[in-house]
Length: 277
Ligand SMILES: [Fe+2]
Ligand SMILES: [Fe+2]
Image 1 (tube, helix red, strand yellow):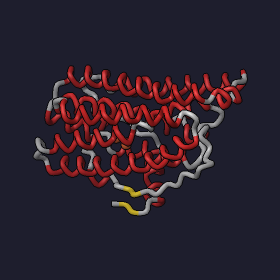
Image 2 (cartoon, helix red, strand yellow):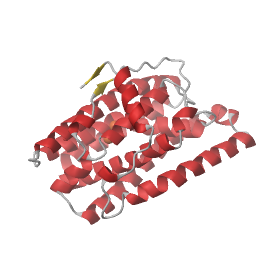
Image 3 (cartoon, protein in one colour):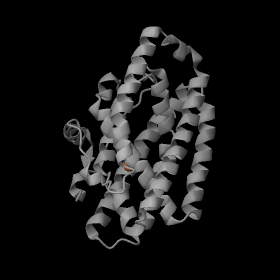
Image 4 (tube, helix red, strand yellow):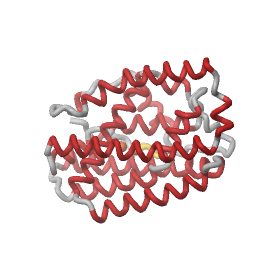
């Protein structure tokens, strides 16, 4: 069992200067903008996950799982607050700022409507679909050394966040299993959620890329293109088996292998946090 004590609520205080490099992944503006665009959703998506888990708590009796659900909400609460600070700078700095703000309003309204109108089983399947995907992505990013090619302070924000995604990877799964438990609904709902999320990631990233052709052109050389293709292949080879494993009926986030970078990252961000609970 993933003990609640293994989920630390770290209060971070990242600083995002106005002149921070938005191409934070070395030589890769497209992938940098893909992540920055995806994270624009977090101040709306993560509160939706919190509301969903809080709603499910009413049906859970197991005190250990209840504590883990509380810690999940506390961790996600820290994530979206830190990302919201970065997002403000990104919207001020990037030419697509106004379009990003318009998309934010749309996604905010959507997740609020879902909380009010959708059944809990849909919301939990969405949450677990999202969490199993972030866990597979996070383990891949650590394993292939992606953080070695990134620039601070966005590197720190991402590494801290995905490390905690791995820490709390069992919570939505357990909440779903205890309240809904239907494998085929988890599979269908999870894949639907992942497509939905990725579609919105592409929308956010797309306006950033379209509004900034100068930056994209600066990195448009055959050598840098070849380097990006190699990185994409390395990523796909690592993430695909992890992602496919989450679709199996016997998938359990508790038993997935964890990369060797995970434990040192936990220690590092506990040390850097303003407080740890
Ligand atoms: Fe998160
Ligand atoms: Fe999460």
